[in-house]
Image (tube, rainbow, N blue to C red; front, side):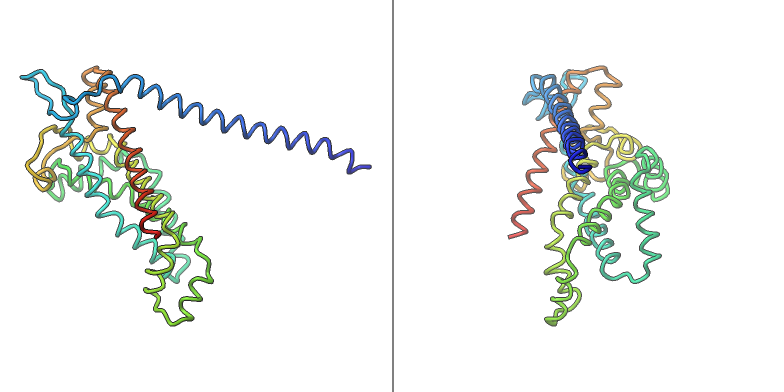
Length: 284
């Protein structure tokens, strides 16, 4: 009798909870679609070939973002080349080799703390250390090294959590068949945790593309096309997010700002699709 009295109440509570979850999911999707739609509606009409293929010039009266597009790709390339081996290697060591649990807990706490530090503090550190102390000046390489420090905790934590999801039986089976520990990690553990590694890479790219505060201090706002990537690394260069800040908050050109925002959205979508495609190929 008591169970029958509770059943309708329990069903009502379950239905209310399910409805609340559906409302929360629908609200999130609606907000996301509205935000993306508004940015594209305001920005796509102002995207032109001249905007994408020229440099800004006060003499010719042109507004171009080609140097900013190139600088963004340079920044992504250099930062990932440095941070991926460091982050994945550190995660593998902490999860597979480190035996001191207290040491591992301290490193995990440090990475979680570093991940929450405001980017402006990283920019100040990068300006003082890379630009002034190391003498790299305000340049793309200083900005890339600053971004490496910013996104390294994200790569370490996502990779480490992905490594923890690999069943222990995989390790025991590989070692039982005579594989060395490195062979086991290289052929079984890393491929099994590929989803988490790709997720960390996507998150890192998203932060690189969207970062502006730290890069203003370290990479600058230059908009000159260099002869090659090595010349570009030693010069001041503003990325697309920095150009968005300059055009909107310093020059009041909101139409150009929305156009750059639309390009950033398309760039992130394209990189995410490319990462998913690369993950499928690597999985095969």
